[in-house]
Image (cartoon, rainbow, N blue to C red; front, side, top):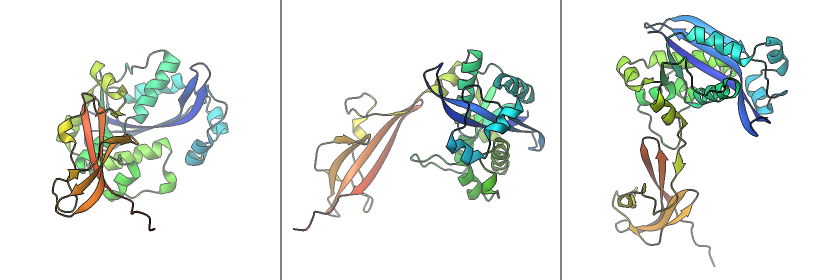
Length: 284
């Protein structure tokens, strides 16, 4: 099996037809590698915007792509997608995180009337793959591509980031260095109804204690100093999507605020617990 690592650049703009903001793809970049992880082909195409006649200033500054370059490409989204489908063939598609695959679905829905990627058979989230390979499980922060490269010693020029082919190449180098056939098999998903349900599920924070997804048995805090269970000294209240209460550690004789966040994901409920020092009372 061959592997294709895809990266997209897109322009955030307002669609009058959809009456909402839309991520219009302006560049495809991809690397195709064989089973021995040798690069056998690359794909790079700009797309002339159809929805917006100007680029978002943030996108321009990040990518250094100009509207003139895009216009001169004369490429439509449907034309470039057709070329990419042939390039992909029956390879396993990989992207860094799910944002690119969701944007690709969004653009297919806009231009073709169907968000399903009918040409796609199997998919792997390369970000999730690298996080698993590195045992990186910081729920508060997803691992960025440059962070992964730095952690595993892959050299890259920061100025080359945020162009589709360059980012696809860097993703490939991370994949190559962390290659594990068993892990890849575990994280490869067939693209079907279950895939679309999962990838389009929007995670959300649970902000009601009566919600059946809240496990009341988890409403406790362990002191981060002595590892003993702290005593709750106030009622729970919600702030910034986390349940908060005042606690006291019986051993350390220390007061602090305990914070618990319940996040509903497609696969279940993630629970995050933190401790915050209470502000010192103002001196008289």
